[in-house]
Image 1 (spheres, rainbow, N blue to C red):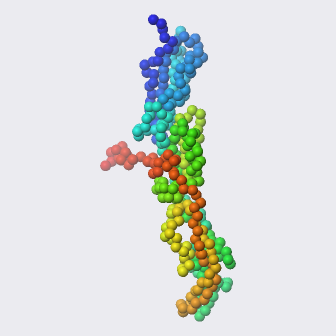
Image 2 (tube, rainbow, N blue to C red):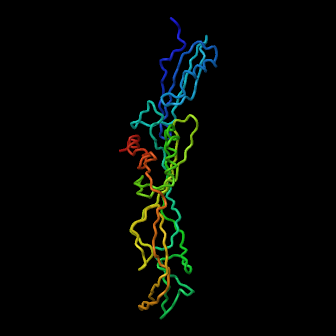
Image 3 (cartoon, rainbow, N blue to C red):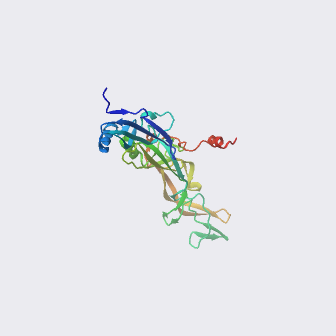
Length: 325
């Protein structure tokens, strides 16, 4: 009976599954062979590289080992690793590189952003030493600006204020096999657009996709991608300007741009509580424009779901660990 050149050992194909700090799983597999007729290490290594594939069931070969037993016999081992694979939520872990995206972290920042406005919520007069301040029967009154801010002659300069803003990032572990395929084009297409339907907790046009960041090295089966978003609230049923010249606005979607065109108009003002009127020329809102400046796109193409990912530890788990009721 001829002695075979090699025998795949009975424990070949063994492995282990580990939980990483970021919540992903890592799997390590090993193929083991008994090989004869190899006079030295280089011959054993050459045989091992030819026999063991670069990838095995979606796992990348990370290490090749050759242990000498004597008389030309060697133990050749090929170690395979998948750095971050999907958990036990219905995936096929037997032969994949992590078939679905896995959420790892969510970070947020509610620091408001600066916005330029030209109309005030309300106006109170403090006094003047110029022609806008008048006195009759001992009672002062002012040329009304009808909510316009920082008016200088015919110009309404306005001011900058802080308004609500919600910036957040999400880091997902994605299968490397398709990140460099059509997915890169998808990220490019969606960058600088807003959601056309509900995304996370935001309604239409409230969430702006700022783009994604990622880095890959040779041999990776999974890649971490960080997605950046910024959200602004939608405003409904509000007024621009004040008094008889106020303009009602039904809705301004989050990232749509609102601006006001002013016109000169004769404005009457009373003074002294005596019912006396005087007429002034003042800038008043003439037209409110709301422009769509970002395209509305389907954010489901990001393949990270439409609700916030559940990256937190379920509450009941802590109770079980501590024995609390």
